[in-house]
Each structure stands twice: as structure tokens, then as C-alpha cells.
Image 1 (cartoon, rainbow, N blue to C red):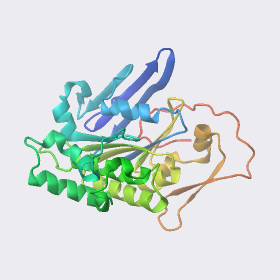
Image 2 (cartoon, rainbow, N blue to C red):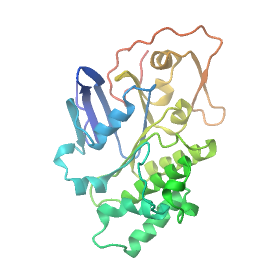
Image 3 (cartoon, helix red, strand yellow):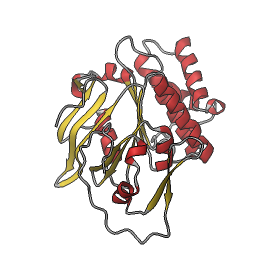
Image 4 (cartoon, rainbow, N blue to C red):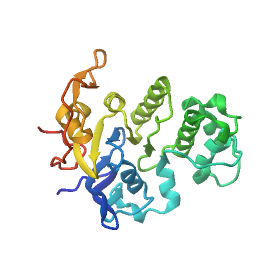
Length: 290
């Protein structure tokens, strides 16, 4: 297949195996500056595995991951930390740090001496943008799951707050809305869209197809480590593709105000049979052609 590189943060035909089990099979995706790409699929589809490969947390068993046309392994940790930030599903932090101190950890790659005024200002601004400024003095382990997610989002923002003189910034988010209430989910993803408008390339792992349909420019739908559908949500979200991914009958319509795709479960339909994988190029920017 042809390369999908030419800048951006790209996975090219990546596979990942644990023993004889394949968690990903020849998946390709490109995270482009200025765009939000959502990765979806049922539990165990390989979404978090793909994010870990793109972050450099682990190498693919096959294929390649590149950042601006350089292999991810060729980037030093300090320069990579200035270019991309990761928000994991949960942060295993038990120390009695305040929310401000946790958010300020994102400034670590930038700090040459402790506690500069600029780092303090950026941390305050990131907490505000994440809707967590009122949590600043709270002890992080005592926060609710949703409150911790907002602080974790602020930490990722502080890391890539400053545009680099050359190259783009990237933000990788693993289920950032899982513990948020409905209003906070839309608030956070609205902030993500704002970041994309500022030139940040965003990958976000989501479970909610309607959130992805509303806020993502591109989607990649996985099942059992393979690509089921890819492209703009209006093309990728069809009843056939969704049934292949989730074994669920749905009705796909459009939102009456935004015109974005709206997915509704169809309980009147006959139970769906076992899902199978449909052929796909695996290139996320190619529209689904049924």
C-alpha cells in the first residue's frame, strides 16, 4: 500500500502481537495538524493498543510509526515530549498532590529551573481551559473520577501549551469522557475542537459514536484489531458498518441542528448475528465506499 505519511503522526500498517494473539492487524491512521480523529470500536477492539503505539509507549510488531516523516524511535524523549502529550484512561497517582501540582507536571519537559512564573501562568490557564480551575487547591486522590479527568486533561494541555518553532503539536486522549457527565463531555470535546482549530493534531479514543460524529473530522472504527470503517463520520457511520463493528442494528440519521450523523439503536430490528470483518484499506482519510 502507498504511504500515508507526509507529515503528521502516522501509523503505517501497524500490527501488534502478544504471543500468537494479534491485538492489531495492519492498521493505518494519520493524525494531521488541525484535525480531530476519533478511534472507536467495542471493548477489546485494539483502540488503546493503537494509541500506545502512536505514543511510542511500545513498538509495533510490524509496520511503522512516524512523526513528521521521521520514525518515532529517532526522536529523543525530550524533543518528543515537547511535541505530543498523552492523557491515559486513568492516572495511577496516589501522592497527596494538589490538582494544580498535577497539572503542572505537564510543564516538566519545558522547565530548566523549578517554578518559573511562566509555567505557573500556563498551568493556571490550562486548568481554566479544562474547567478545573476551581479544583486547583484540592488534593488529587480525593477528587471524583470526572474531576480527575479534567485535571489530567489540564496536565496534557500544559505539556503542549506552547507552539514549537518548527513542527506541530499532537494530543492523544484515551477515553477522556468516560467519567464525565453529559455537559462536561461536550465541554471537554468542545475544547478539543478549539485546540484543533489552533493547529493541534488530536487523536481521541471514544465509545460514544454520537460524540465522535459531532466533534471528529475523521473516524477509525476497529473490531478485533482490524479496520471496519474509516473516513469522515458521515461516510463511515452507516448501519452496515456499525453492525459489523458492534453486532447491533442501528438507525443513522442527521442531527436536526448540526447536520452531523446521529446514531440510534434499533431495538425493533432482529438480533444481529456474529460480526465479521469487512475489507478496508485502513487509511483513515479514505471515505467508506459501500
